[in-house]
Picture 1 (cartoon, protein in one colour):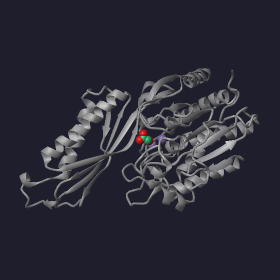
Picture 2 (cartoon, helix red, strand yellow):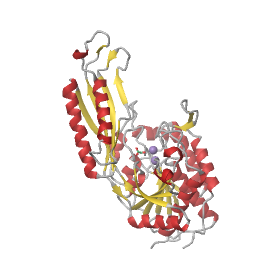
Picture 3 (tube, protein in one colour):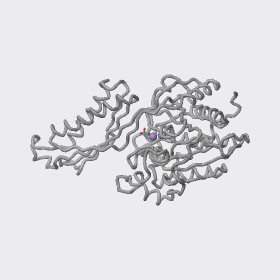
Picture 4 (cartoon, helix red, strand yellow):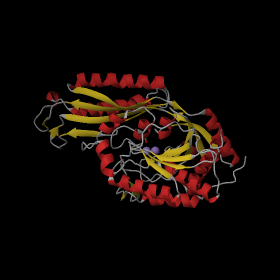
Length: 420
Ligand code: GLV
Ligand code: MN
Ligand code: MN
């Protein structure tokens, strides 16, 4: 098998730049332009219309489902066969670069443009998709659209999720014009492919061109509510306080200790990403804190043990600090292995193109892990500069790094799309 087709790297880079202008902001700390396109905000709506216009220009048949996922279909020679799907997301965290998710979506559209230019018609249809609220940064649970589409999260549960201002997914979908009519559960595609930036330092530091993703590690998110007693900062003796912020700080330090101790394996990660004190004023002992906990581990048993330890620590801190602590699970996924055959095809395609490759587990969550529940799924990673920093405006992969990953996806797509 040869790789007679290759994408146009600069066209892909230009497409990433153009989408990256939507929702852009000047990051004060770095002086760089970042991207803020939280799911179902006006900026996300603008991004969606931008990508849909590209899909329309390519003559694709576009469908929006009831959770706002957008599917663009290119017909196949045997058009009744199940399609090969390529997808990712275009929503972002509020401090993003322009590659996270967008590379997978725009890379897939670049592949379609390449096939069109070559007048190459695959046996199976091809679907390019982007999914609603992959980040979980607005409505609190990640991979939302793909989880609904593949049956992990019931749609009514997804509709009821709300952001910090109390706006629900259902209202925001309707308001943005993306509450589609298509049934959210599709017949399973023949296979699912996603190209994504690694979002970590491994490939770049070790000098590999692409990553063959073996799977995604387990993810557990908690929202923790700590209730103490608000009091005067100047007059309340230290021993008479029930200080919710001290309790939150102790949990945060415990998270770092838990992750660095090695007790839950060498790859445990633990983060307190949000801390909201009430009333949050300089001279008041906070009576209430809402904080988040994000745990990741590539081993399910270790993850369960780490969760149990954290939950036990909540109770310990509650007793020792004289506060009440309650928590709820806002996201939970087990380790997801990707399809071995497609991993081998990715590795072989990379080798044929003279690209070095590393098999690696994904540290971040991805839509592909949801599709793995219903079909054969796999991912290609590309390296990132600056230690692969991501969820940060410095996020950057070169034209060549992006093109390598998308070309590998193209080769594997062509194989899968010819399968009977
Ligand atoms: C999604 O980007 C996640 O891994 O949090
Ligand atoms: Mn992503
Ligand atoms: Mn992300």
